[in-house]
Image 1: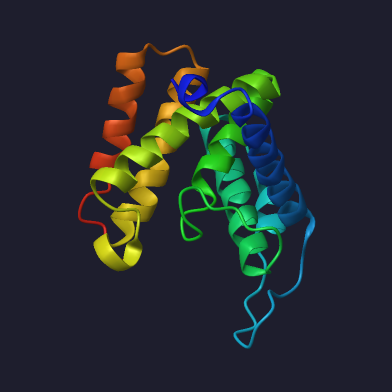
Image 2: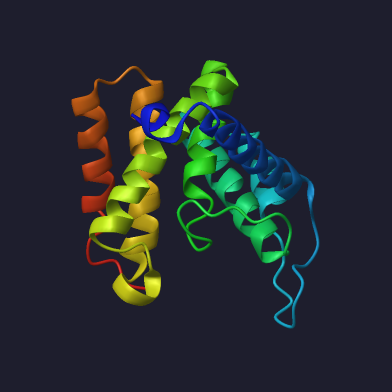
Length: 181
């Protein structure tokens, strides 16, 4: 659907987005110290990542997801190349899920980019029919949409049908209803 409406040039856009997400994670995991600004907030993703390396099973996978998501958020806060997925406030959710799945399943970038197209469709559905703005609808608009986008992309990458992809996105959004900032 995305290729039909946007044309083949959209594939290079998704490749750029995926590369940007990966760079944010990798830079964030290797950066230490304080984030810029007067609050003196310490970076934590590198230490979370180091600790995750000593964990196994689902706890280890979850710890890695946290580290990847935090890395993106810290890179945004540091003023580096900014990732919005769908917003700056929820920037780490989708990249961390995609990065984790790529590592676990050795997925090629082409599949990740196709999943980004699916995630983008879900994000646009919400943006058009509701809102992704935390100022308008609270964190459910940002984090809920990011979770829906990630759920749809992950389901596609794991071989889900269009119905399963839709249902995964719906569950991701539904479980964040009422979440306030």
